[in-house]
Amino acid sequence: MYDYRLNGRTINVSDKELEIQKDFIKKIKKLNDDFEKENSRKKTMFISTFGCQMNAHDSEKIEGMLGEMGFVRADEEKNADFIIYNTCCVRENAENKVYGNLGYLKHAKETNPFMKIALCGCMMQEENVVETIRKKYRHVDIVFGTFNLYKLPELIYTNIETSSPVFDIWKEHKEIVEDLPSIRKYKFKASVNIMFGCDNFCSYCIVPYVRGRERSRRSYDILNEVKNLAKDGVKEITLLGQNVNSYGKSLDEDINFAKLLRMVNEIEGIERIRFMTSHPKDLSDELILAMAECEKVCGHIHLPFQAGSNRILEKMNRKYTKEKYIEIVSKIKEKVPDVAVTTDIIVGFPGETKEDVEETIDVIEKVRFNGAFTFIYSKRTGTPAAVMENQVSEKDAKIQFNRVLDALNPIVYEKNKEHLGKVYKVLAESVSGNDESFITGRLEDNSIVHFKAEKNVIGNIIDVEIIDCKTFYLTGKIISGLR
Ligand code: 5AD
Ligand code: SF4
Image 1: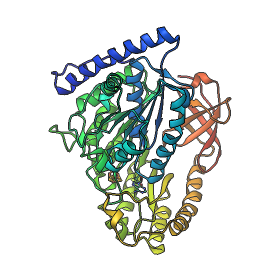
Image 2 (image 1 turned 90 degrees about the vertical axis):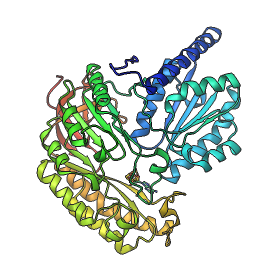
Image 3 (image 1 turned 90 degrees about the horizontal axis):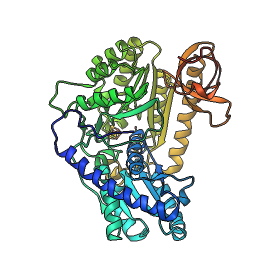
């Protein structure tokens, strides 16, 4: 578990805050212990996470705090005493799902008098959402945003004390609160935030409005966290940020992302380093060199290009051209042998024509991506793109979207086929969802592989030969055992 080390630093506001929250955790723990004595069961929790890896990582912190308060995981959502949705607002369908689930929870709450419902994450930073929750979803007990996650213990305690809903949403928060307890999903791999927020203001994207201005964590704190994780048996680290390539800009240290990678690479016990997400406009030669020279940094880069048409890229405020993007990727491929390149693509941005989509397909064909997340543009109120002319109809966007997929999928399959017959180091991660006798793992390039093996290989890096391949996964045969 986690302790509240102060890492030899002078106590600052963040640490004081942490102490305050620790007291609330103790108070709630006492209440939960009393509940257990009276009801012969522990209070249970259920966390639903929407959206990106940032949210997944925040949910680990939420689970860590709730765990310290004495909550245990519920088998099913409807049986839980504390339900929390960590929401995403990047696209509309993720928002609709939250509203749908909340409607259902109204009935579930009527049958469980102890049930508390909390909402947090990006959606809660939108004023119209919070208004809707207040008016139409009165069964919600606690609402907070992306800047005050660490206050969860206090908010829960206030809700218990006042027996009324607690809404606490901040517009901005510059402090980074270090050392929140967290429960990791995997013992052998972990994510580490290196920065929060985003200053890029891509015209379609709501993230800068809900996650605030870019703030980097001090390298000292990041390195300490990674060292502690390594001591705890973690082999693979993913460094997280909306735009990791601009790491360090908000700090008064002489540091950038390439330097940070080199420092993490030195940490004993860590065997693999991943990072996401990179923005093409900030991708430096220094970073490419660090990727090439740091033996622990995985040969994979997720580099969203979003659209191929220079006209659309400009309207998106992406600050690079199609040609520049292709040039950067060539440089990476040249310096980092066997690197896998994955990307994000948006189809149906306002004003995007069939001809513009041809440019997107051209990038796909030139770069030959190992994988891509493809999205239909979703209009987000408050962003510049939402009020642009020539919004594309859903029907037209879908047609163009399918064209993009038809171009992409055969290439992804072809790229995957390059693995056939070769042996790779694989981190065995979990029992396969489809067949209990199979283990699922990841190659260094982030490809997923299923192979027959005993459960005790999980958490180890082993040699696997690739014997079959589909578009989205590989099948392999184990060559070497544990190490
Ligand atoms: N509509 C569709 N996709 C979006 N993304 C961000 N905002 C939107 C939007 N409004 C996608 C981008 C980004 C990924 C995380 O989500 O491709 O890289
Ligand atoms: Fe959104 Fe652009 Fe920032 Fe990514 S870089 S989070 S797409 S604004």
